[in-house]
Image (tube, rainbow, N blue to C red; front, side, top):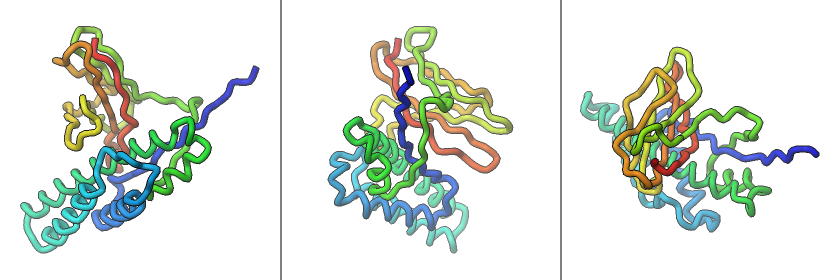
Amino acid sequence: MPVLIVKRVKVSLELFRMSVSLLVTYASNIFTSMSPNLLFPLPPVTMLALQTAYLNLQMAAVAAATGGPEQTADMKAKREVLINLLTTLGHYVEDIANEPANAADATVIILSAGMKTKAFTPRQKQVFKVLPGKLVGTVDMKAAAVKRGTHEWQYTLSPGEVGSWIALPPTTKAHSTIIGLTSGTQVYGRHRAVLKTGPTDWDSQLSVVVP
């Protein structure tokens, strides 16, 4: 009997490859695309927050162009804020697009949010994992090894809240352990590799119940 392969459509952001001006334009397009879009009734990031973030970055970039190190640092901080908001929205749009009722129109739904797509199937190797730790109150995160790069890890108890992600120390090895968690709570983790060409997109967040 043939195995049914369910194709999932993934949002491709590649935000860290964008210049500041391109990132602002991209965020503005998503704002315009999602604001009146009934397919996304309860986004974890409000459109007002998104608009504020890209306008703040735009103003910070203008100040940095004629300012000093302080203005440049402020621009970089505001760029990180906007990237985090867009990443959260990307996961939200991807989840809605791949709901069983929407599967046939997943690509159209993602494009309607002003985002790009990248298709993959379960036959492709999915290596990022969030697992119960060996000790009570711990959770393990694992990813694919990379050459001449590092790994960044984050976790949260409230993935829908902007700014709730907690960063763990970067590692050269493809695993990290979260400690000091409360047993029985649900923890969400995400990972990205930092390569010579820059950071990759965050992997889709995964969750596990803390042992």
